[in-house]
Length: 177
Ligand SMILES: CC(C)(COP(=O)(O)OP(=O)(O)OC[C@H]1O[C@@H](n2cnc3c(N)ncnc32)[C@H](O)[C@@H]1OP(=O)(O)O)[C@@H](O)C(=O)NCCC(=O)NCCS
Image 1 (cartoon, rainbow, N blue to C red):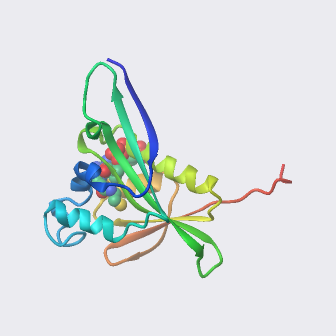
Image 2: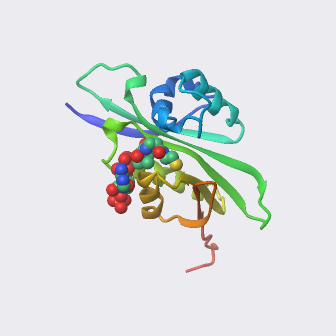
C-alpha cells in the first residue's frame, strides 16, 4: 500500500461541512464555552463561518492518499490550516497574516504533520510578501505551544489565558549578496 500526501488550497467559498471531523477536534467538547456556545456541529460550523471571509481567508488541507484502498474524499483529509490575510498594514505599517486554525486528526498526530502544515503556512505567508505572521494558543495547549516554539514563533504577549505568537519575516533586497 502506497501512501502519498499533499497540501492544497480549498477554493473559496469553502464548504466547512467537509471539514467537520477536524472541526470536532479543533472545537472539542473541552472547548465549550471557550470556543463554541454548545457541543454541537451546528455551533462549530456557526463559529467558523462567523470568522470566515472568502476574500481574506486561505484554507489549506493536508490530503492523504492510500492507493491500495478506496476511501471517501473526506476520509483523506488529515489536517487543515486557515490563515487570514489582513488587507491593510497594522499600526506599525506592517502587513500581517493571522493563523486562525491548525488541526490534525488524532490518529495522525505526533507524526510531524502539524509541523508540515505550519511550515506550509509560514512559507506561503512569506512568499506572498507579508511582513508578520501572528497566531494564538490557549495556555493549556502543550502540543500547540511546542509546535509554535519549534517552528520559530516568539511570544508577543499573553492575554485572556492565551499566548499571542509573532513571527517576523526578514525581507532581502534584490541587491543583497
Ligand atoms: C497542535 C497540533 C496541530 C499538532 O499537530 P501534530 O501533527 O501532532 O504535531 P507534530 O507531530 O508535527 O509535532 C510538532 C511538535 O509538537 C510536539 N508535540 C506534539 N504533541 C504534543 C503534546 N501532546 N504535548 C507536547 N508536545 C507535543 C512534537 O513533539 C513536536 O515537537 P518538536 O517540533 O520539538 O519535535 C495537534 O496536536 C492538534 O491538531 N491539536 C488539536 C487542535 C489544536 O489544538 N490546534 C491548535 C490551536 S492553536
